[in-house]
Image 1 (cartoon, rainbow, N blue to C red):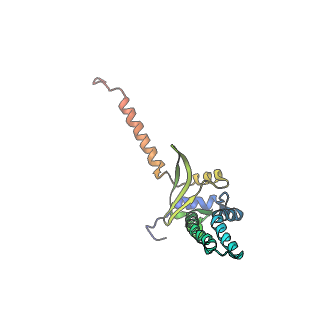
Image 2 (cartoon, rainbow, N blue to C red):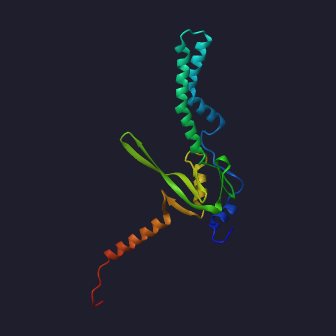
Length: 206
């Protein structure tokens, strides 16, 4: 490490002392059977139209539209289905796969060392159902490193233990990008200002 280079020594030392082996971030419904079922469900509609065209051709349908039509429609349906599949793959590339004493292992073999961790962000999820809107505080964790960001999603096995492990880390913690330390300092200043303003004025003889 060169002089002046960013290095989060407290977090790096904490990880070497508290993380034993590899801590897997196991997403719910992420088994091989679950992945196969998801992609089967996603591509079942274009697949059904393609099989309909093949069946019509095998049965010797004379009308060209009977054979070509379903295949063309299947090809058109592949575009949005393929887009959804690519979007899912793009989202998954930012998810954490496991944690160890050296850092966080992300998708596609990326490694984020603890010494390069900037802060941990507890992100709120905002949702809207009809005319009703709401939010889920602390929905997911975002670990922001010098080389990028890794997400620990909410739907994982042993979520409480994972949150407890991350929260025990001596790192800068934020809520939706706002530092908890800065928020606490601002709250103290507001309290002191309120107490000073509500204190009775002293008389000149005192």
